[in-house]
Image (cartoon, rainbow, N blue to C red; front, side, top):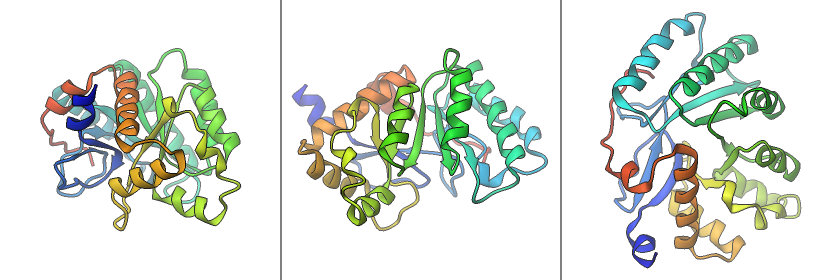
Length: 239
């Protein structure tokens, strides 16, 4: 256990850029610029009328390159095309995720309830989802965990916690069996900053936290950490 603590890199659950620190393992998600993602999907911001024509390409990428997860996919009421397009694209990709037995990284903006309603229908068929950039309240956090899904906390949650520590005090007791940390596209805060912050409010060593997050990843993907780290970066034309 001690060897695993010291040797395993810190896990950045969700980002669109590669961390150059060799002590960090970044789970890169589509879309990425000049980078090979290890999770493929059609981001809701970039869905257009021709989105269905990209599904065959996505399926081909999955067959050839064995991505870690499908992502990021989801629903956004503040940005992107009309909601029906996003919804249909999400459902189509969830079907692909089930076909290939892959977990999903979920983008949800003002749409947690809609995503959870979808999850309720698909719960028995699919691997867990992870709601990335989670920054909502305790009630929603509990609802997501109750659905069998996970939360990934981004730098945005630090700002909200600092502005209203009472409202976000639930982070101090959040079930770590359902948590990850990420940087997303933040350029000012790196994943080690996220670990330091979360470690301070939880009073848990950063290596202990990291080990728990890797265990969570192993559980949702069905792959152990040695296999995940050994897999080569895979180029994808699905952006």
